[in-house]
Length: 135
Picture: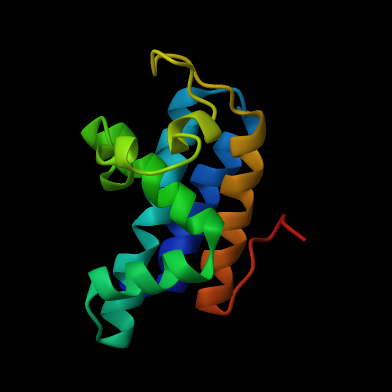
């Protein structure tokens, strides 16, 4: 499972399909975000580039991939790097935009579903493939 296309087929597609079937599941949203985020590792290996550099490029190219990156790191580390210095930045904190409540315990997944769906489309585009059930 070294290629991006194979990783998408074996890991991302079924994980996304499970989230699609359980779109109100916090757990499925997290697992899908992590699976999508780690697609960058397979792509970097294929292309012979550093994953960190490719991650930066993909985050610039796709707002949805950037949001999935933030979400995956938020769940893993409690706060993503983008959140750690949020008080010094103007605007709405990103976790509020992603649907978290003030306490960070509950999450409204209505909008996140579409972010994740479009991030799946983005990583498939990078692989030159498509998800079999996404237009």
